[in-house]
Figure 1: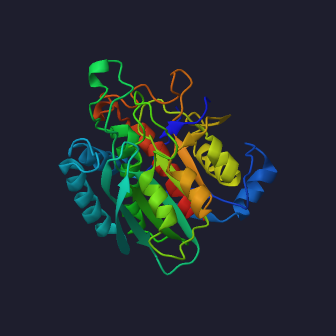
Figure 2 (figure 1 turned 90 degrees about the vertical axis):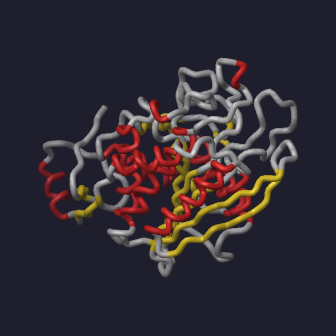
Length: 337
């Protein structure tokens, strides 16, 4: 993904999480008798426990294949594993194969994987992440690594790992809505930083293809959530620009749920930068309001985590705490619908 412009409180979870819910967002006032009366009359929803060990394993399993660069053996093997794993959980799995042309003329053989849960339901939520990894460490501090492919533990594998654990939960506990999980390919094959060619639409090739050719011609979801870079320590999830442009109400809904769970130090109510990512094309082409939960930092020149697009985007920098915060938040969003 590319930026268009510049821009702990951990709860102990076990078994089932209970959250009271009402209509719209609410401000909690502790010790208020009126609030206690209201809370007693609000429905209580059971939210499955997000197993962070399972999510971490799914991240680790992807990285073990090596850099997941389209047209490589590691990419093919990881894709086969993703297909098999998603088949364990989803009611229906679609594999969308395509050939797309990258900015440098390379023809990429890609696969988007779509897992549908309760496909008979018309009221649907879309969850997505990209499963490929960057072909080049073009932001590595060592110029010798600028054409070296990266592991992409955080940038790619973390979002997929979180969604695979959510898929496992969906296979056990049916929410009141249908859910589709999409793993997009070729998100990170965008223009190399040092190559002087046009950058327009060189990123997110898999989601561009799906947005124009969805797995079902009549496909629509009420809203969607994209996860990208959701595994690094000290992550800060700000209001990404295109998310606020296309789906501000969904941003507020998700951040409110995160805050109600005690995750306000991660989900920060401040503006972030505009990021060209998979959600941008789903919004623009498919007209489905999709937001991006993406780690944005203020201390780096590029606005992302320290090891973004470097050879050090490895498992040693994946923090289970961040996976848990994001995973439990998205799980709550689903089961509170």
